[in-house]
Length: 150
Picture 1 (tube, rainbow, N blue to C red):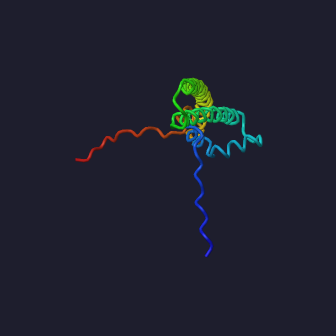
Picture 2 (cartoon, rainbow, N blue to C red):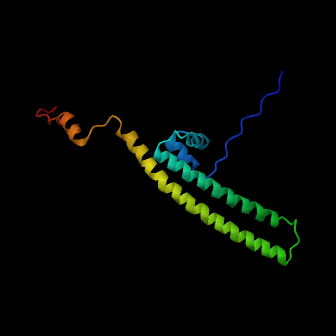
């Protein structure tokens, strides 16, 4: 019997906003990026994917400096003046990267929220009538019965 294939690896979330993006578009982030590369997205979705790509790049920077800081504090290097300078420099760079990531996340949210609103309006608006039309097509209210059951 041939060996069983390994289970498929779960795609790791690039950002905490991935789930919201996937929910509103109906596609995973990797598919959206591929659609963007092929130019098949409309303007709002293309702009959302562009901002998400920037967020992913800034998250990679944060992860890089976090990994570097972990390595510096692992005990691999002697703790001396140069070590403190490297740790301070790395923390400063990580802080800048985190600020850039937070700004990118705000830009993604600024683009994502109108897309979510449009999707919600589209979902709620299907099969409904405008208020004037609804009043016209609604049956008249039921008159209370003059007879009562005793």
